[in-house]
Length: 319
Image (cartoon, rainbow, N blue to C red; front, side, top):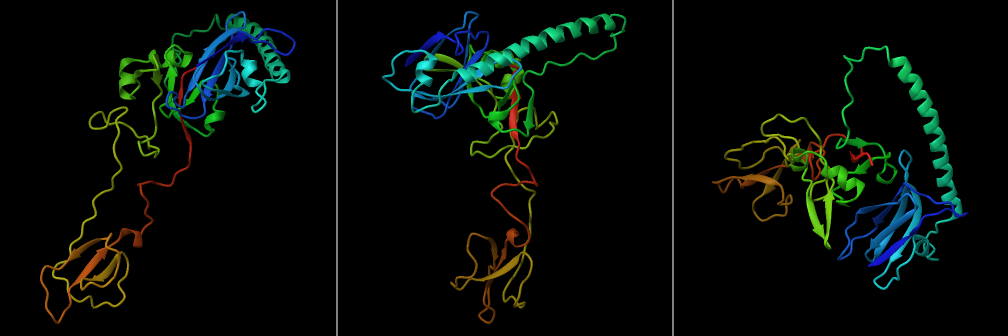
């Protein structure tokens, strides 16, 4: 494990503070899960991160702005402790450049100016609203824990939204605290649990995927057999048919979803299809099997699905 610590500054020595550094593990090892860890930068710009051997993508997070990618670092079992710049300046990896950090500083300066403008606008609005009767207004519901499908890729999600794939966050991280502050019922319904990995506590976001990787469809609960967070396996309504005393199929060109297959050892159709076979026969009329194959009349797949379009399942944590 390597200790990554120091003072976060830009190219001319200005301190960058009150932000978050995220390390996203790009692969799973025997000690590291594919997950994101968040580390707060203090008021004086100081930060400390303990990283196990792995490849990490590094991002800088400032409230109200999209994440800023700083580069990629590699931590090995024999890596010496150092600053973030020491690891990012690895010649094989992306560098944290003064230009990138200056962009961050510019964004923060713009944000401060926007805050000042917003504060003045808010004062004006409060004076105007002081005479308005708000007793009938509906208060905005807290969105923490809101789950949706979004038309963004997972690495381009708006601030505060996270990919709903079961990822683990440190319990002490802002994301972990947001998850742990959700109600007991919410955490139980969506299988959010606290677990210990390498002597550290983690908590997971919900997942929208089945164990085999297929995405799930979301539908209204009925309060009975279908509750919030309950899973139902895929199924179709039963299709039943029966053919009794089947011998020679007189139609030489069967149509639709039926086909014939001889029971005299010939190759016929593949035996994977469902079939009904005669229980008695006559030598003048060779026994036949009538095969029912739904794929002859309708598109089939390994799952039941309507026409669909891909979206990213997300959860809102607000941090």
